[in-house]
Image (tube, rainbow, N blue to C red; front, side, top):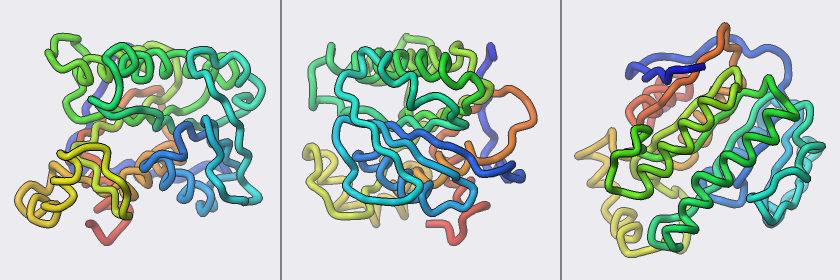
Length: 247
């Protein structure tokens, strides 16, 4: 996989699933990861879910296996639980401004690369669904650190050798359920969300819809090796075509 393909708006990824899949989800205690875990556990196309994170999700389910892992700078200890997986949903991340620039890069780039390294060795045929962000810049020219770091992580995943890599670049992610917002801008966006959504529908996505799309795409058969980038409007199109009603 040497090139990343953009997905045309309205493009449907709807193709038959092939047998129950074994999924691993990283970051299930986060907003999007939590919805991804719930959807995966409810999906008949999912055989098992391995949740990897620093703390437990707090539910019990016959499909679910939770693995606690504190240091994502070294994922060598995850080789066994990552063995035999069919797909990975990677939602680990942090908010810009919540940590130092060095910590932001470590979380965004280093943790992604290290996890992908071990996963690729343990389950080389895994499909990888990655939560990036709107404005991610794979060229490295952006003045915004977050954009550069997300772009660097995208490049590393594409080069890692997975048969399929799906990169999701959402714009504003609406939390759906009440939560403590990380900063003022998020509090403001939540307050004006109904108006903002009406005026700029392609600049917002519900957290549950985003999570659903990230899981759904890896559950579907892919006929060839590919790397696809889904911008916010592409994600909304997926939800509209495959998961009505659109929101």
